[in-house]
Image (cartoon, rainbow, N blue to C red; front, top):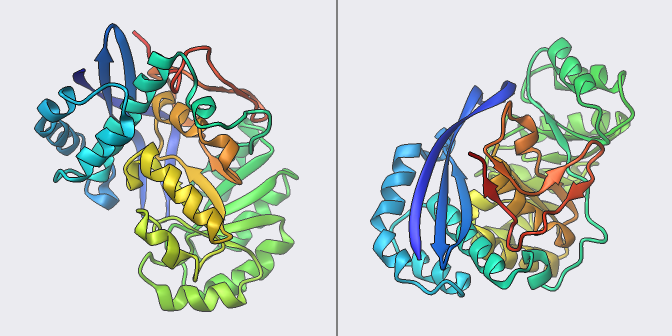
Length: 337
């Protein structure tokens, strides 16, 4: 196999805010693996919260280039096992693992969801995320993008009022994500009002390591609570089962499709709801997430919808959430010129 990296800075259509940061662009690294004229693509975005930069991703992937290029093209799980023994981040592993699966599926001329024995006859609709901002800006963003399900970023002392204002303009399903900004008592109190406002669940209300607080929330919250920052890798799933009703898996954080498949299986065996989320990826990363759709209860794969301009073609999401899968195998991705 031949390995290459392709750095990009993605421009967002709107400034995007969460409780701890705000940004207008997103750096991302595309890894490509080519074998016998066929190319697979994977992606990992930079992330200051986890200390990941475009430069660190490039250094890590360059460090394992010889190892990757010597690996067989028909064994993505074997490659991931090999990479798990190397001193690189899960973000770098994700880009390589995703590319290996895309290449494998393209060589088989079969989409990954079919290779995994699943059907796209039914799948959850992705939410569309409304970044944290003033009420007026958040309403305007929502009205600009009519959608059946919204995820609303929160993290202020006026969060319930923000959701109440948004509710006046739509009857869509709401999900809220506090990105670790609340405390246990605040979560329990907010949930009562949010349930009345048609919120489906709360994502990661407490800091990732506040397990004592989450145990309190899990027993007293009137809404289901999903883990995000508390559920990074496979080993976190079992612990989260005691404190959350479900998990939100991020491919970049766990290390790619290979561990995500195992996390889905483990969570379901523990009776948990399963969601896969994005990190503002282009259609490269989003098309990989889409292959998991038949196995999920919820999905947040709106990353490419938030961009001013995409860098790839692949899975396409139409208004209302219908997903169009390309004819190509694998994840179906092609980089645009």
